[in-house]
Image 1 (cartoon, rainbow, N blue to C red):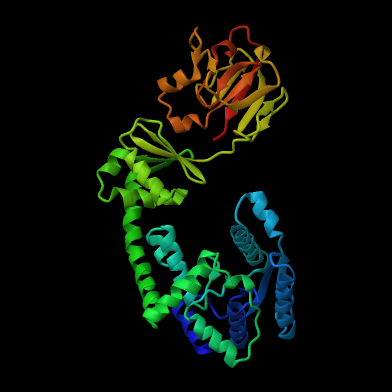
Image 2: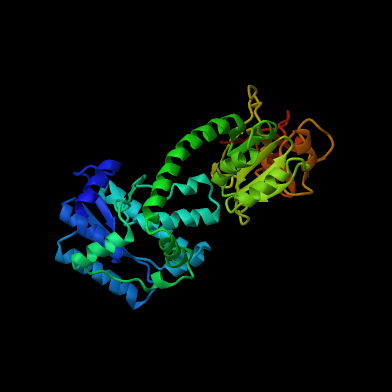
Length: 441
């Protein structure tokens, strides 16, 4: 098996023999076989172990087992304990997702601070096949069919050449000790259910299913490269990224073949799933304003475009500007200064700037999102106007409106930030002091 490891690392060009590696070791069968092989191979490596505190004494025993192995073999190691349940609760995510996030964040941190070139996980051929079926069942598209990649960024998977049977046989022949995670036997998790139910049936049907499926996964991986090049070419024709917004041309989309799969490949990047893409396709003939939400983004059908924006927090704090405030970062970035109005003073004719008569302002000023029913007196007009009507006149899209903030003085809106000031607060011949604001984009 050691020779197979050497050959796989060379074939896949996973790392150079003199590079510094971090092995992620749980204490289970797979990670202990990986660690023993790397020790015998003489690679320059250290060990990282995560204690997620999810299985009481069992978790602590795993930690003791790994540190004992490292001490006996004089291997440098790092251990970190996580309050995983609380982290999951605070973030509103599953415990499994929380454990995944914190461990990979820590591994990346160790690579940066300790100078490791890569960190290795003990994924093997059976994990590859399980991941293939998980992605197939979740509808991830062709990107999910390539399975686990041998190298991805800082992560390497040097055991993908071996099946679970190979790893078990190596441990048995070499009397290698390891820890058994009791949760691996539970079939309530999708991966375990595939492992204990589906794969056992496949083995009965075709004992050589591992090699057959891993061969197909390799071919899917090569096919995806060709597919991805064509998708990227078509995306360049359809998609425009502008001021944190993603715009997709509906007329251009309708001229393409396979519109549904093309739109799926574009929108999956923003966490929209296949059933949502079906609904979005069906909304093409609907009136403007049809809105869809993923976990991270919102999509609005607006005239001849789909417009995508990142979801923003509903609890965004209302900010205040005092008479001596000079700079604001959130929720918008604005520079603020007071200048005396002289004979050569000139107003900057740019909507990113607001020149206001400071004597007319009531401090502190406020910054907030605009809301339905808001009105102001647009610069150059004597009558008041609803902001919603102003946005229509200015042809501001629905999704752009969601990002607009206003500057207020008392109950008055004095500036639609980035668009227009209020007529009542403009600079006049009687103005002595000017409050000059600039939105920094």
